[in-house]
Length: 96
Image (cartoon, rainbow, N blue to C red; front, top):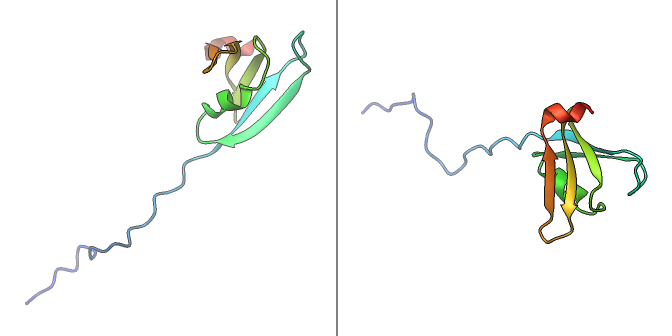
């Protein structure tokens, strides 16, 4: 009896999926009436992580969000509600 060797054997040892791509993001705050200038850099699989990091900032404080050094958008916490209300400007407004 012939054995088909063109297909790999079925086993429980399937390779693990590749890890998610992690990019470098930067939240850049300017000097304003609400706080001092600062820059927060972090690696994440999604820009949504920036909202978690920015959550501790004062209401109305605006930040420029960059991905790999390129402007992605501006974001500002508009309310201290739980969950907070965010204002996110499109990428074209990021060049201000």
